Amino acid sequence: MSTPAPRPLYLEVEGAAPIFAVLHMPSESARSDVAVLICPPFGWEDICSYRSRRAWAENLAQAGHPTLRIDLPGSGDSGGSPEDAGLLSAWVQAVGSATDWLSRTGGCSRVAGIGIGLGGLLLCCAAADGAPLTEMVLWGVPARGRAFVRELGAFGRLESTKFAPHGEPNPPELPDGYTGAGGYVLSAETTASLSALDLSALALGPPHPGRVLLLGRDGIAADSALHDHLLSSGAHVSVAAGEGYGAMMAEPQEARPPLGVFADVRRWLSERPPAPASAEASGPPGEHPAPVGRSAPPAVEREHAELTIDGVRIRERPIRIEQPFGSIFGILSEAESNPPGELGAILLNAGAIRRVGPNRMWVELARRWAARGVPTMRLDLEGFGDADGDSSRFTDVSELYVPELVAQVEAALGCMAAATAADRFALVGLCSGAYWSFHGALRDERVVAAFMLNPRTLFWDASQETVRYLRRGLLKPDSWRMVLSGEVPLPKVAGVVRRAPASVLRRMSEARGSRGEPDELELALERLLDDGKQLVFMFSEGEPLHEELERHGRLAAVNVPVELIPGRDHTLRPLYAQEAAHRALDMALSQQLAARAPA
Image (tube, rainbow, N blue to C red; front, top):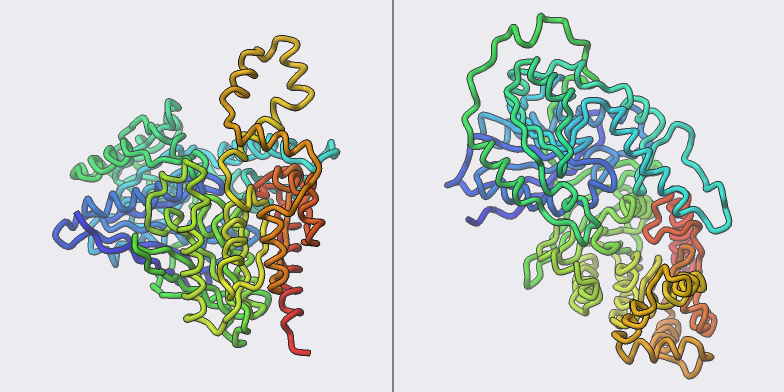
């Protein structure tokens, strides 16, 4: 059954950061009496599960449920920063305001909330604070915030040593009291507030909520303390296994929607709610302490968001760019008070990560550059974020390096030129986004600069990955020691070499020789520089392409600047790596602006 196209919007709440949301409405003929609010998990899990949550919202709308997806303040495309004071209260208020708006807008008698991880904690706080949530689905939600913080911290400690700069036994630490993992952090204040949160101390029962579905995580049972508290509070509680959580939280290009859970939740929502439980089950008035949040003020729908960045008012608005398969999606940031200059920028997906960029860096960058007078769009290409298309195709990495995606970048350039005063552009991307930036500069004369972070390749060749595997794996001295000691069977090594195509073995042979005539990459770099285009490469430690370019002298031959980013993580998860990348990108922009400034 077809449904209307999803509608991106902002919810404006007085005194609070604007909330980015996407509304999925059902067809009028299939309208249910239950609207649904989907609250995201935190950080890397938010990134990985984004397309699954989009698919979930579409699935619910097809079943007749008006469904709203939101980004929490300080995350995604919403306003605010992870550094903001009172962030936990702002989150709870945002959930409450979104619930209230949906109850007024959706035309339904009931509102159900779906909360994953942190999103479920916030749903419970908002319900205890009076948000009109008649039902809740809580997936992987602990009874205590301390459990969430401890799990996040454990992952963060594992990462810190793995990604530390080479030769530093003690990697740079987060600021005192901070907790983080996967490139996302909680400030000291937010960490302390979450650690003190105990859902069993909140009034959770009819009518907010009247019933709850608790979902485990792939064999890990739902939190028993939360289950028991909800029962004792008078809520009608159901429990399901929640199979598919891990698949939904896989790397973004590998993540898959949990279709079984979709079906379970649809069936559960279709059930009529039971008669209200006895008021005695909830205990006498005043037994529970005051909730974390406060009564949520009403939210007003807006088509754009207004923000103040570095003392400058900027405006953000969503844009759809029609394509033969549907549309790609972007969010444009522009200064309000001073007219934009001639330069614009487009920030491209980092692999399958949505438009917010690695570790939300593109959101910060777009707003900061807009405040400098450079209109900046962060873009979702086909199959990513909120763009149409089949995301499952990108399990084959070669699909990231096809001409069709570069053509979509060119379509976005045309849209930017029509929507702003910009007529020349800088392209910015990480990984495959760097590849699209490079080829956008080759193909389109409007592109005057390409800032490329950790590109895996600049001319796709399927044999490259096998070469890198051999060179960085089996051809290391330690690897041969393992072969000679019997830890790795010699037939396994022989099998890999035997199956390698001739092009791989030829590349390995060429890698040992000296650099010969200019190759395709060197000629392309020379052409771009001859055309006066600014190229900047930014590499983390140990990046394969950087090592190959250095080995062959390609960059030195054409004098292309290279900025080195500390740390050994491809997607810049350490906070110090993000800060270094921001500085390098700001400097590159300043050089472009200075080069074009009138004498």
